[in-house]
Length: 246
Ligand code: PEP
Image (cartoon, rainbow, N blue to C red):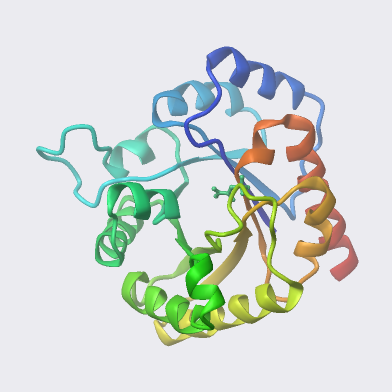
């Protein structure tokens, strides 16, 4: 299981330090990886705080070029150098606010893999697409256009846009259906191992149910990851789930 905390453009240095201090005596489980995605500027700082802990570090985005004249962008190689292991690509906020398209996301994924990062590629439909009955076709075409081919292992986050930050979550059947389609599409792209995370309004009171669904390999958490108690409660739901399975 994988629990990703996407802090977006939140938390200052003091709050980050408090968050990590609050984790001081928490025992992470070998079967559940926790990874935090702070804003770019605090990647180095967070790395210095977690270097002796079982927490991984990731970035919320990267550029596809190794270096060059790309003002304001960050190379995946720089992220690797700063201790990142993972990078989120194609988050719906990036797609909507910065016009990042599937082609751009695919190029970033190849580049991230070259740099030694594991990409977490986000896909998800809008409420209009869901209501028109076209969610499956939409997700399939997103995957077809943005997934890299023949890579060893990859993470894909199913994040329905209508669920992000709204408190509304899809039904168990809807999550199960999309996650199994994602796994099939990844096999068609000859990807070695694919882990599929669910993202969208994951909270302590729904985490256990979500993580018990077939083909849910973890969660990508936004709002609830900013509060250490909520984050750890969700993490503990994942640990409970792996104990049920084994
Ligand atoms: C997200 O933005 O990736 C997300 C899942 O947000 P939230 O958990 O707040 O819905």
